[in-house]
Length: 423
Ligand code: ADP
Image (cartoon, rainbow, N blue to C red; front, side, top):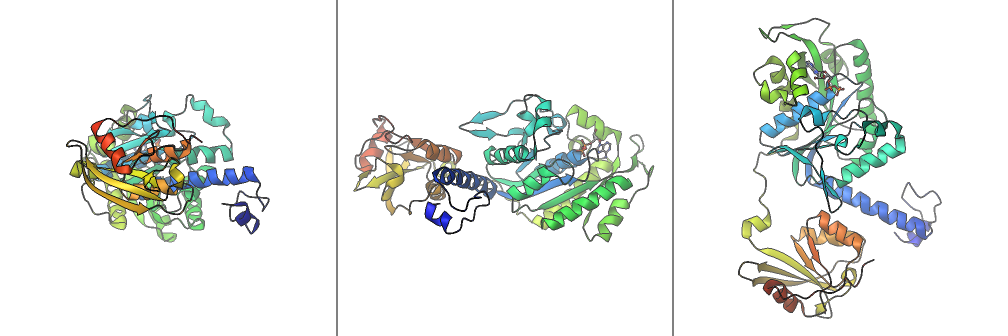
């Protein structure tokens, strides 16, 4: 954004003055790039489901874990994100407590709980659980934003988000940061108190125009672990009645089964380890209408282009027919398809560079399937954006003709010097 556009009416909420100085321009650029990174990440996820509850202790995390496991067992690639800042319980429920996540090139890599299930919890990053207690609203928003922006999920069919209970800052942040949430699953227990809390959750969703996938009544009756019979020890059916009164779909009742608690403490997903029980079947059923509503075709994960063809696509920025020393200011890109095994150039193309716009080139080249860039100089920020897209960058090449650069790269004789544009 330029000073001029700002003076003529800045659309950014953060610009209070209405006419930015340079600092604000930089701030807006940072915010723009951050928002773009966040949008890029979320673009790769087909469906984002927020699991929420009016209050704590009603089984929200239990439902989130078992929903994610059920979807992953159905062959979908699933991410489970725990942003319950004050009580992250997902690591324990999946026996990932105390595990460290890897941070590579500024990206947080989620842990794999199984082949189709990746997990990320704010608990993996907290040095000390008490740290979170002193975080205030805006700080929590910043942490949740950073968390959503920096976790590298890759392509996912579903992301199940375990949100903190209530309708406060954290669920609000999530709804604001993920504008295209697929919908919310609201968990309640049959007691009147949590039912009145869940009404607030429904109102919250309506105010934010967040679609509701439905209400789950957890801890509804007691399932005897010996004979399996379910006895209504407290009043039940309140969740269903309330869902119908408020015109929200009802996703089912899950009885109390002491093995839910035991499985949770042992870090064993209940729907998997106790698949035949009444409670597991009720938990599995929650996924059915969600699958129906989202209608994701069950296709195998796409094989990456490189795996499919064993070729590689390389881009070289070009100005005046030679490698451009300043990446962001080139006129064209020479794009080569090469076979690194036979060291052959299979195809080459020269395309006009798009108009200069911050953060655009990583997306533009990513969409063209580029996996490697060879250039003279590139700023640190741009390198970071490419690395987030898994596009490798070689800097310090000299201004030769692009084909000569590629031949040198293929036969291992490419000489590189200093990054001439490291700002
Ligand atoms: P929340 O995320 O709402 O705070 P949790 O999922 O952590 O709630 O559940 C709170 C406790 O209740 C946990 O110990 C969990 O194992 C137990 N629990 C949840 N659902 C059931 C159930 N259907 N039967 C028995 N115990 C349950």
